[in-house]
Image (tube, rainbow, N blue to C red; front, side, top):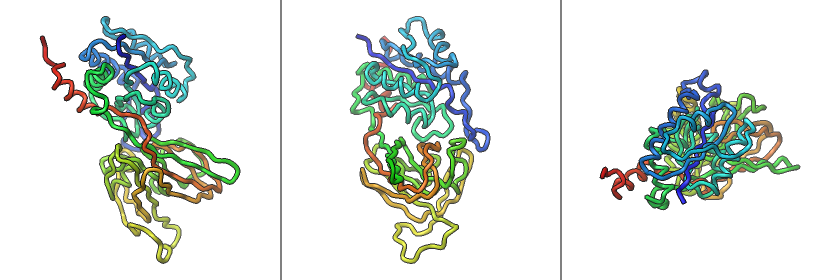
Length: 342
């Protein structure tokens, strides 16, 4: 039986308010369709994969299917469309048993939705969103070829993928526990409402935990990365708390980096100086706690949960999705002779 590659293209990725308030890129549905067609051409290099595309109400998937190369076996995934983020999660759950690899076009939010249900199926993530830490800016043709080689078994999954960490949040207000999972970051914000969802002002950030940290990234992972780099496949994570400038510093406060400034790209096109009051490397499963009287918990750059008089415990968990190392997959395929013309 031929290997199957799932294709998830989020029609609304890359359209939030950060493209107006900062320097975030805009990804139109035309651009996504062109990238998807590049992915399909790349799959032909690996030769033999069948493709299933997540349907949507914007007509994007239909155009991708009708514009595909004639010699490529491609169809729409048979599923109901809700015109919400639930579509991505439903498609991921279906692909967890129906696909040998999945290609995702979207931002951090889209990849988080896929990660919830994709299980052990390797993901190739292409950046077409606004706040992009996890997905990679890569040519779709190369990404498609990598997905095809992994799906077909032409390259070993163990040598061409990495397990990405996650961050789990447990919110306890004394009456119930609510849980939230972030792929790269979970933050606690000094905001009362979810509102526009995007994090626009770094002064709203109280702190957070990240599964990856680098000054070359954006948002919470960039803030933590100003102190220390943490690769996405390393166990554990980093917890930090920003200085509350409205309160005087506590005497003998325990901290690994007392009130030190970090310069970070907090929003695309926005560089901010933030003051760190506490910074700690966390083992896998180790909690970093916040007592929140009124605030919002964010995941991967988007506000998700409104919190009142609650304890918020964040902990890194090394149980995330398996991401394809695109360069490694392509190079391993080349070594095996798949790019040699007969």
